[in-house]
Length: 114
Image (tube, rainbow, N blue to C red; front, side, top):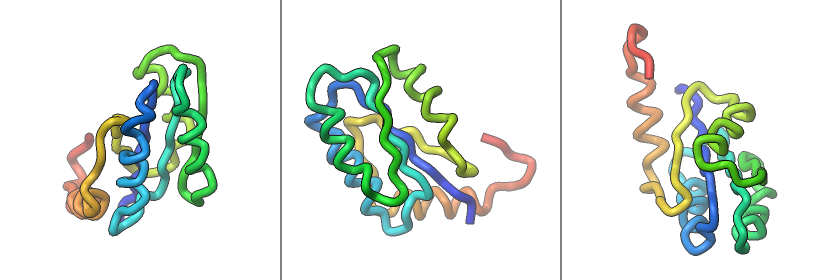
């Protein structure tokens, strides 16, 4: 099965991001990596993100605010998986999302790229 990571960029979404992270951690088939970056939040987001840093497949980072595109680019350096899913900090995943995505990626024809 191909490896799949999820990356979450956060800016002042502390009201929602716990649900986003929790939905990644409680997948029926785990993500190979969960990478979270706080993009210079001015509220308590970074403190909440760092609480997840003790999980074996989660890496948490903080950087100065430069916008979502640069936050996502920042996280790319830490990815080691075959594929990556970008999740907004105010979204959540169904518990079988990783399983279904990996299943579809397994059957991807060799002449297809995404």
